[in-house]
Amino acid sequence: MKRVLLSAGIIAIAMASVGMASAQRNPRGTAKLELKGGTVAVEYGRPSLNGRTAQQLLGQVPAGGVWRLGADKSTTFTTGVDLVFGDLTVPKGEYSLWTRKEGSGWNLVFNKQHGQWGTQHDPAQDLGATPLKESKGAKSEEMVTLDLAKEGDGGILSIQWGDQVLSASFKAK
Image (cartoon, rainbow, N blue to C red; front, side, top):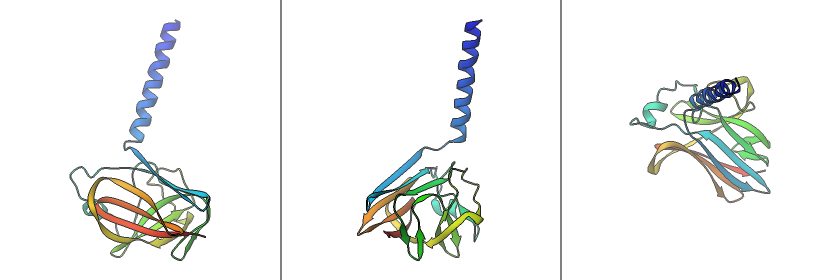
């Protein structure tokens, strides 16, 4: 009887693990930056192009639509210091990050909810948005890659997929 219960327990654990693995199909990535005594960090899903282009995939987002900025669980942005992105002040705390298509460009959206599935964006929870600068990368990235780089008394958040790079500068307040 003990063997039957033990076997049933092992099977249940294996099935739960498979269920969790299928919910998170893409690897997760992180980027961190130390800034004015605090840590700025981003944690995100990393989908692959799989023979497609970023322009093809992101071209499917309608005007005013949001993209989860990765895959699976929403992208989480954490800051231990108050930051300023253009005209937007982002108080220290934890947020989900999104991009919103605006005309021919993109905005970076900070949402007060975090930890939700990546398609569950509630615009009523948006803290605000800042424009993203678009450029071409020196090399192509197969998987979505987010980076935080130090610049002066602040930094740059960059998002690259294929040869497309979206970036926003920020400063510690």
